Picture 1 (cartoon, rainbow, N blue to C red):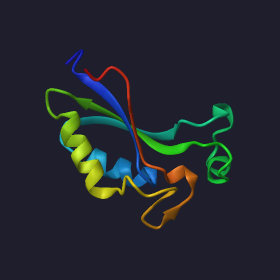
Picture 2 (cartoon, one colour):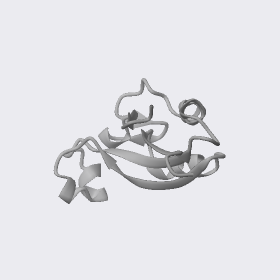
Picture 3 (tube, rainbow, N blue to C red):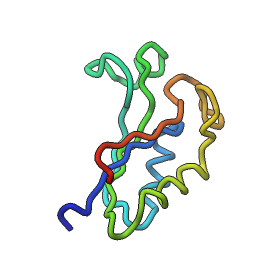
Picture 4 (tube, rainbow, N blue to C red):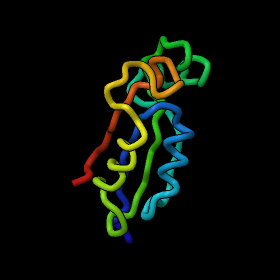
Length: 108
């Protein structure tokens, strides 16, 4: 299994909703909620992020077994539940922290 575990970061509105979706998918081995792409990481509290001053997006780290699922499958599920063109919102969630985004490192 070593070397098969890959990680992708998905921002798509409320991180608890995205995390719930990802946990339900085959091949996902771990998830964690957090924040990405902001400033002042040491101060990235929920209240501060919701103030709109940090630039952070609510994000889910998704670790998956690349022998059991693919980035394509994860992204397919992700884009079925978000609107990638919405600005500063997803569904009823409104604020800069709800901007959509996909982040990765070394998925090849």
